[in-house]
Structures are given as C-alpha cells and as structure tokens.
Length: 340
Image (tube, rainbow, N blue to C red):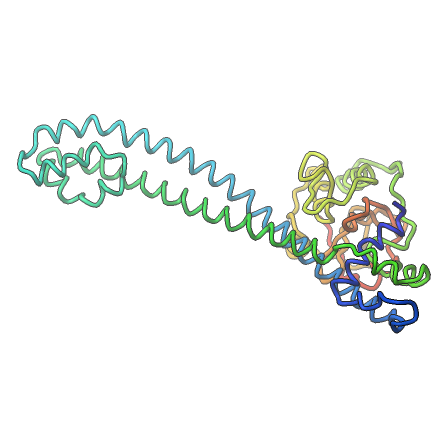
C-alpha cells in the first residue's frame, strides 16, 4: 500500500468519526466538502488519537508495575503462610494443655485454621487460653496478622490490575474507533482533495525516508540515541509499542524515543506527558541531535537528528521515518523541545 493510500485509510476513519460520511452519495447530490473544515477535524481527531495513545501507554506502565507488585506480594503470601503453618505445631501444645470447657475447645480449634482472619477474630480468647505461654501466642497472632495483611494487599492489587486492564482495552478500542477506515468516504474525495488533506496529516506529505544508514559519531549518549533511531527506520508503528523485543514488535512515538535513549544508558519516562514534565526544556534555537521535540499539546514526540530533520513513529499504518522538521503538521503543532 502506498504512503498516500495508507495515510488515507486513516483519514477516512477521521472523516467518518467526525460525521463527514455525508459526502458519500449519488454523483452531484452532495455538496463539495469544505477542505479547511476537513483539515481542522482531521487535526482534532489526531489530537484525540495522540491523547488516547499516551493514556494507553500510562495504563500499560501502571499495569506492568501492578504485575510486578502482585508477583512480589504472591511471594510474601507464600512465605508468610509457611511461617503461619509452622507455628501451628508449636501452639498446638498450648491448646492441648489449656482449658477443656466447650468455649476453650472451640477457640483451640482455631489454631488449626488456615484462615488467619478467623484466628485474629478470637485473639483475646486465644491469649487467655495461652496462660503462661502468652508471649508465644502473641507471636503466633502477629504472624496471623502479617499473613492476613499480605493476603489483603494481594487481593487489592488483583482488583486494581483487572481495572487497569479494562481501562487499557477501552482506550485501545476508542482509538480504533477514531481511526476506523471507511472506503466509501475515501472514494467520495477526489485525488486532489485527498492530497490536500494528506499534507496536513501527522507523518504524511513529506516524502519521508524509512531506510537510511547512520554515518555520524557515536561518542556521546546523544549520538548513540540518534544511531538507534536510525536503526529503527522502517519499523512499523505499533499502538503501545516499545520495540521489537517489546509490545507488538514496533514502536509508538514515546516508545521509540525512550528505547533510543535507553540504548545510550539514559532512562527517561514512558509517556510524552511524563517526559515533558521531567526533562530539561531547551530553546528551539539550541536544539541538537538527540533532543526530543514535542507536538500536539505534548501528545506526540519525535527525535531531532540534525540537518533540520527528525525521526518519528507517526501513527497506525505508517513506519518509523525521517522527515523534515518543518513538515506541515509538525510545524503547525510544535510545542517545544527537551534534552534528556
């Protein structure tokens, strides 16, 4: 599929989502579209897409952290449960030497329970039963409390993880709806009208390069980040992607620049909003290769690679490419630059 065609598969979704499918109909039956309105609506949808993408990235990052936490909590629960069970044997001797009335027998039965909360609910009774071995019983109750807390944290984390997964999928579905392609809408525009819209779209209209070798220096961290970005040329844009070894085998815009700087030994945040907030801002007149340029209310990022060019992972349907930084969409949506 050509770059023009692939761009317009996306643009058609834009037009449909923004209610522009009314242009489809019998020849001469519908009014000609106002191209300035179409451009504006395309840009508005691009902004929504960028925002949804970064929100997806943030949810994915939180989801990853929740999974790590759940794994750690699972290990804690396993360890605490083993300690809790080990103390059963020790406190069973206390139960055997305690009162023989029905109340105390019932309380003693708790000592064989695998439910730490049930044990804790009768703590005062168990302490009374312990008699002179009160301290040993207190240690057992402390272990029951530790296990109960770990189990509750594990459960809360499982609930949070499920909620994050649902949120992430909703954001992905929302973006898919925004970019859904409609061939009928595409067919309703002339080739000239398509070109007029295409040149205002992100990552399109500049005749970008998707294959080029890096021949610059590699002595600094910025040089290494640029070299990495060159190596990613031609890699497909992937929603939420962090690279060939990560999600989906490709990159989204923030995933590309994060991976590039990581290859140079520099850790930067995952999303464009976090990067913009955390990294030092620099004047546009001072940008150097490796600096990050932000667009669309900080919803999109590309890397400056020198000679007035940037490398960018544009959007679904396009590959990582090198294009002039003064390309229409980028020039009109530029916010500023940072230096990791």
